[in-house]
Length: 138
Image (cartoon, rainbow, N blue to C red; front, top):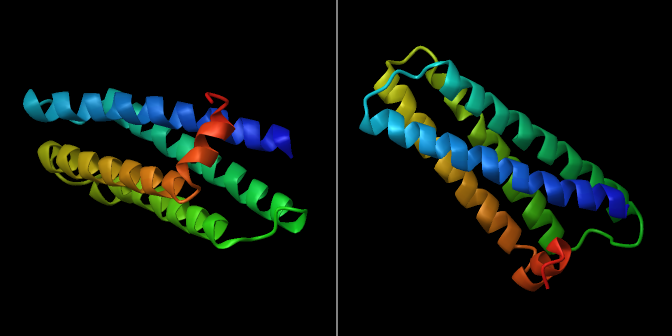
């Protein structure tokens, strides 16, 4: 079970890096009035793929550890639901594929930022001291 939690913890940093790269690309696209090109689409696909992977790992850990000794306390449910909503929000940009580049870039930026806000809140539901312990930083 620790291996699954470790992989889940490592993947969160990949999600964060992909999100930051995507946000930078989208902000530059808005400022420079660039097209929503293959680079932006690739970063968006990477972000969504990592969010899906993270959600799958999280669900597996939630179920397997919950059926073991961890159980299903409220904070675990809050974390799971918030993260699933964040994953759904991360996929909202698919609705704007046929919009003009400016609208698509703006709406994608909003969706990615909102997904990250939900991720932040979802991690917070675990309790920040627990989060620091899982990361191995303290």
